[in-house]
Image (cartoon, rainbow, N blue to C red; front, top):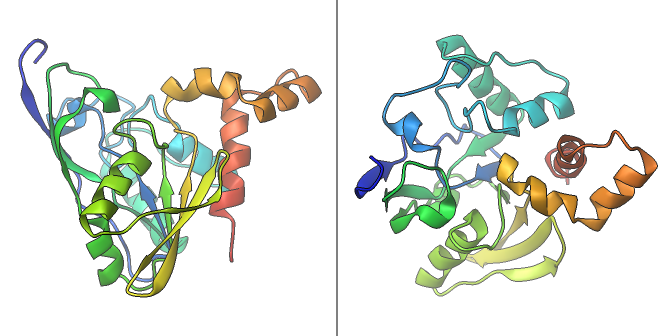
Length: 225
C-alpha cells in the first residue's frame, strides 16, 4: 500500500448502547484493522490496537481486567463494560484516502465524516462527547468543528486548557465536549512538556505519561454530573 493512494474505511459500526451518556470520539483505527491484518495482541474492536492505551487506562480507572488478543471474548468484555458504564464509541471518520500505510491523522485525505449530530438526536440520553485528541489538524475536535459548521453550529469554550471543555447546542439542548490527551503513544512528547506532568514528575520521579493520562481520564470518566 505504500506509495499508492488507498481507501481506508472504518472497520467498526457505531457502538451506542441504550442509555449511553458519554460517547468516546476518535478518528479511525490503523489501516491493518480495515484489512484484517491484526497483530497477536490486537483486539478486533474500537481502540483495539496493541499500541494504544485507552483500554488499559479504563481498566486502571475502573479496576477491571480485559483480554488483549483477537478473541470474540475480548470484544464481548469491552462491549459489556461499555453497556454497564453507559459509554458509547462513535469515531468521527467513516473513511478517508491515504498514500502511506500509517495511522497518522495528518495523513488522512478526502475525509468522509460520520454524522455525530444525527447520532445524538437518535440517542437522547447522550450528554457528553469525549474526544481522544484535540483541535490539531484532522484530530477529533478539529473534525467535529467541521461537522458543526455544516449545521451552522459552533463550539463555545468553557475551559481552555487540556482537557479542553466546550459546549454546543442542538435544538435548544446543550451538550458538553471534552478534548482528552490522546491515548496514542504519539502524544507522549506533548505530555512531557505539560506543566502538570512536570509537577507530577517532581513529586514522584516514577510518574509516567500513562499515570498522567489515568489522572486526566479518571476525572472525566468518573464524573457523574
